[in-house]
Structures are given as structure tokens and as C-alpha cells.
Amino acid sequence: MFIGVLFVTVGVFYTTRTGHPFLGMTKPQLFRVRNVLGPLMNALIIIHLAINWGIYRREIKVLLGR
Image (cartoon, rainbow, N blue to C red; front, side, top):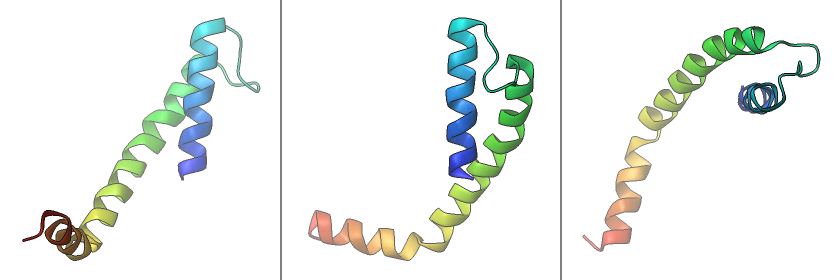
């Protein structure tokens, strides 16, 4: 998923700057792919944070000395 988002981000940046297609994909096509991958990536990040919330809480306690 991360590689897909990275690929699309580079493609959008390149297409916006130059106006040329990025590996055969036009700017509207890249935006459509980004509109699918972006929310999926956000959902995976939220799931990851929820699963590991206990670990994060313990790390913060150790870092803050509480």
C-alpha cells in the first residue's frame, strides 16, 4: 500500500510540474488512483494505531518518567 501511495504522489508531483504523463498515466487518472489509495492508507494507519495503542501509552510513560 505504501509503495502505491508513494508512486502516485511522485506521479502527481511530476505531472503537475511538467504537464507530461507519468508512466502513461495522466493527471486525472493519478488523482482517481490517489482518491482510492489515500483513504485506504488512512484506514490502515488508524487500525495500526488502535492495535498498538497500549505499546504507545507505555512508551510515553517511560519517556515522560511517569
